[in-house]
Length: 380
Ligand SMILES: Nc1ncnc2c1ncn2[C@@H]1O[C@H](COP(=O)(O)OP(=O)(O)OP(=O)(O)O)[C@@H](O)[C@H]1O
Ligand SMILES: CC(=O)N[C@H]1[C@@H]2OC[C@@H](O2)[C@@H](O)[C@@H]1O[C@H](C)C(=O)O
Image 1 (cartoon, rainbow, N blue to C red):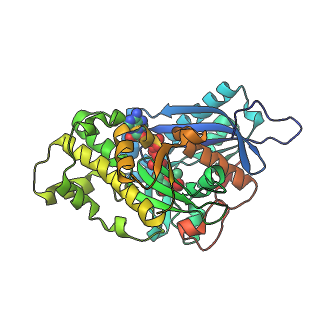
Image 2 (image 1 turned 90 degrees about the vertical axis):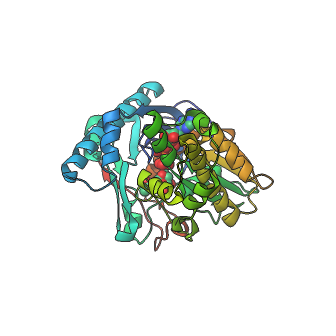
Image 3 (image 1 turned 120 degrees about the horizontal axis):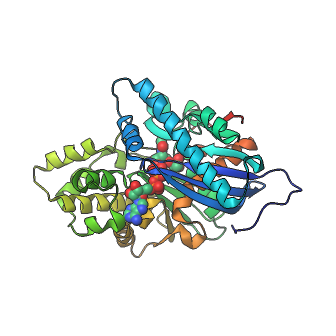
């Protein structure tokens, strides 16, 4: 991938925006990318719009059952669309493009419930409002069709990781550490990409530091680094059926939330200092990712990390420690894509797939009955 100027005017518009707001609930990451055929040819702009505290709190409250949910969800969806539109405006400004130059916006929405075993996953959003506010065609709801075909609807990024990070001669693993973590296993060559959610990424660490220090995340992992990993608590946390389950598997805040942690703390029967709990949660994320790699990609020598977790120095150190002698662990930045841009770029890529009516899922990853075109169109 390279950075380049505007596309040739002799070919049809090939500019897409991807917007991702993930399980961390921190805000929306956006990119504006150009495509050549099916492949990303350049990223022209990147932007991040943080959510205000009240929207974050409203979205957090929607992760579990509560009163008047329908209205609260609808209002949160409207507020989200306004922030998405703000992100689109920033991307247009940065790149010097106008809405008319754009082909589509691919927007993930905000996961507020993920229950594929019940036949649904819900990414709340108001794509009609986003189309109205931006004047650009919007593609949304990328997960439902895969779930309708019997799949998990997640993770979706392995197909994109294969397209952008796959290598002809080297086996690679890409790890996305957002609120939840997922791995993509990319054997050398074009075939056989595989992947699944490994469990918590930053979500529990974020929740714990918020509870104790009222900070939204543990910058650099400094607070965790001031504590000691508690072996007993780590064992309690790792004794979760999800970690032992065979793929296909996906997860969310439906399972990994603060009450899940509090229950394990109670079972441990001890009062553990808060920084030690943070150190233990960081080790939980690192060790469950490493276990997944060792079990499913023992020969992959190169591990590339993306998502906000790549910024957590303690987490990266623990992951390197866990994989020492097996794999080199680096950020996707060394492959030319900043770690915080990867997921947003994935949704620009999924919008392009939709536009070309090409499948976006990998049945081997999600467990769907077959390849499916993902997304629904809201014309400008
Ligand atoms: N400097 C930093 N130090 C430590 N952690 C960081 C730093 N910057 C970001 N993070 C972590 O990354 C998180 C955001 O990551 P990201 O944007 O990948 O999440 P997301 O889009 O919600 O992901 P997903 O959809 O994959 O769950 C923050 O909540 C925080 O925990
Ligand atoms: C249901 C849902 O929103 N899942 C997210 C979440 O965040 C990380 C992990 O869990 C992954 O399964 C997925 O996101 C990425 C973008 C994916 O679909 O690949």
